Length: 456
Image (tube, rainbow, N blue to C red; front, side, top):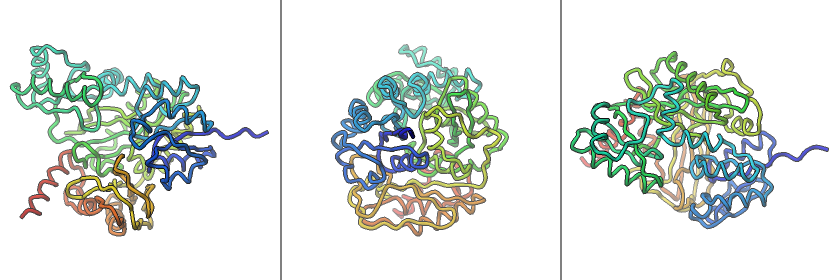
């Protein structure tokens, strides 16, 4: 008798939920979705085998409700839970609860997630495994002002204070001179406690004009780990990524290979299983580790485009206990890919734009991929992240990928809500971005210049 296929519960919503459903279909798995009342009529749910409502619109009572998600898994007969990105995707508590319920969490273990989720312990682990880090101690700051001042002097100004459990650009403060230091430490502690539930902070050297470069990894439970190339995510606004590309332009490939090999080796050492991303600041020919994301990234499609690999399917496979089907010497990257995050928001003020999509035209053609859950008639909810699509273009060269991005963005139309498509059209024509290699501060500087030009 043929065994019933394993069932995956998708503990997420929107674009990433549909992406996971598609990967499960490819693998021949049964797939079920948990959703909030606000998403009850979401079109992407029709692609699942079965769905269940787990609570009201508020994320705290639905997508962040661990008991409700576990009850949904039991009710729908799920063996595995995929957290997607955002929500509970990097919650060690959730991973632990899933394992305690006898289910498989599609991601690393709770212990590894705790280690890499805390910026200080992650830095300590990377230092131990030879991954270069930003100058600064691998320990949280004490309360003693004199000790804090001595640490800052040892690092050298400017320095940056960060929340140990932080992310998303919150819990960060740059200090340029000693007179600001102690107050900055106090304010950062308060912000860390408010946003992340713990007030531990640490301090590092502040890099003036770095780029944000990532290394994608995949690791299995058999001691294998590979890296799948690099991404440049330097086009950011308020520490939130807007455009991503692979590979990072203008960086020596030998240096990338060296860093990638160290990342894969560290995954083997710490027992990491699943997909993950090492994030670095890159400045003056040097890489500095800043954090690891223990989940699939929003920008994973650009890596898929240049490698030809299905990262989400591979992530699910290794969670099922399979060995990686690809070895490091089989990983090949060709061409260039660019991803534009399309948000339902005012392109000038960046205020979210909720409402009904009354018309939708998606681009196509050679080298164009659109990952979206949006359809005409769909309501963009005010309760969740405003991203409605990702436009990804591929070319044999970066210039070809840019040209296809311009064409795709010109073709794409969304009616009924405001979107940042006009902003992306401008970015794809902005001279410094088109030249490649801008810093993480470039976009905000460019936006200020644009505002000045508009005012004039």
